[in-house]
Image (tube, rainbow, N blue to C red; front, side, top):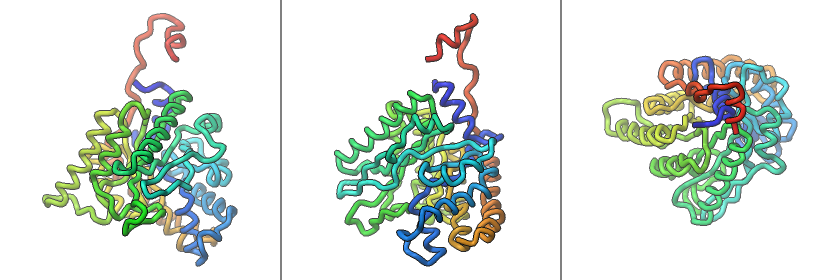
Length: 345
């Protein structure tokens, strides 16, 4: 049984229907790339002030429409924590976006001077960590990544806060599709995604909510139907769903920057397999930035128009097709005053 702090935190992340309808705003390189594309400059030339301005616009337009928003501490928090409505919960990123990329794979680390304790102290409802992971990485990389995820899990248990783990397969150095951008790996295979979930669903890691990518690239997913391609994709999603169900860990889908229509198809597959919502970013807000920044009025107009309509469509799809998450009932039987206080460790 999860602790009350973790269960209350997960409850805070859901909407009134018990679904996770969440917006990711912690992107750092992808956000800089969107601003750069809009301005016709190199991403390295994007300023701190521009990053803050963009994130503030997104929060201003979209926060009230999401059950939760995912902030990073270096940009989103100073940009817009004052705009967060009381009805929208807060997930805060822990991992540094600059990772060590070697021939054997990628090694993650936390943002400098940032901890689980600080996230809890600032009022965060959950901690999020992205772990680049593929089971065929070098042994020292696997050891490092597993130890990193496990250590954060222990800290989240200590501070009684939900642990949201995002897993992403990535291309090896030297491969045809190698890139350090936050895009779907060109050589991603379903078994790499499934086996990654199998590893981190183990109790030793302390994961409370998975943020997962589709096991099949979004652009390659066939429409759901009576075809071999669709049946194969259903089996792969169901393999993930079974692992999460057996471990008692709810799961949501990340958008990975795919087109809105593609992401809705991803969600239809995932909801058939038991997923309980989404934690999406670029598929909702990317166009508004790339088309209009730095014209704040135009950015806001597109966010309040197309982006909100996309989010509303995702919420409707989720409400009609996804399983709801709920607090699992009373926390045991107590006979005397003080029993609960004494038992709660």
